[in-house]
Each structure stands twice: as structure tokens, then as C-alpha cells.
Image 1 (cartoon, helix red, strand yellow):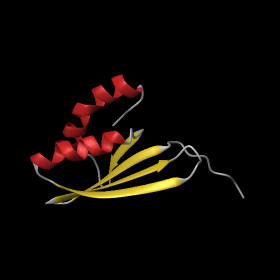
Image 2: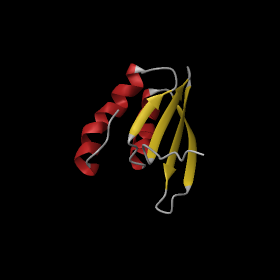
Image 3: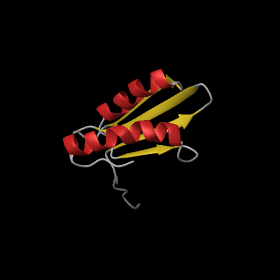
Image 4: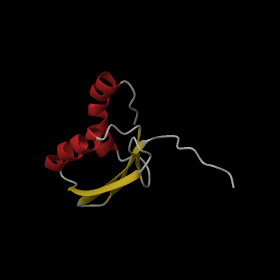
Amino acid sequence: MMELNALYHCVASLDVHQAVVIVCIIYEDEAGKIHVQLREFGAFKRNRKAMAEWVASFQPQQVMESTGIKKLLFGCLESFAGILQHLFGSFSL
């Protein structure tokens, strides 16, 4: 059987609905164990900063939305990308 190697050790996925955004973070710890964190956020402006800060706290290497780019949320996360690149060296949206 072919062995698969992880391309990224931490990723974030957003599922955007009308009134809620469900965020899933999948990350690998130093021992190689996979962890999954799920959290729901409101889709309103007041909730977006909390969502972006929570996602950024995991230092994801990739962030994706389940059906495509959502400009409003992407813009919110993108505003943190420069800071994250400065702090952690590698971060992309």
C-alpha cells in the first residue's frame, strides 16, 4: 500500500451559511497525532474578528471555503494574513 505524506500540518475550512460560519481546523501535533477542532461563529461583522483570531491562533498553512471564496470573510481573514506572515513566516489564503 502506498504511504501518503501530509502536504500541510494545519489547515482551516470554512462552511459559510446565511447566519453562521462553521470552521473546522485540522492539525497534526508534534507526535504526529491528528486533531480536529470545530467551532461555529455568527456571520455578522461583530463575529468575524473573533473567527479570524481563532483561526489565526492555529497558524494554518491553508484556509479554504467549502464552495469557493467568500469575499466578505476572505477580506476579514486577509487583513490578518500580513500580520501572520510577519509573525510566523508562512501563511497564505
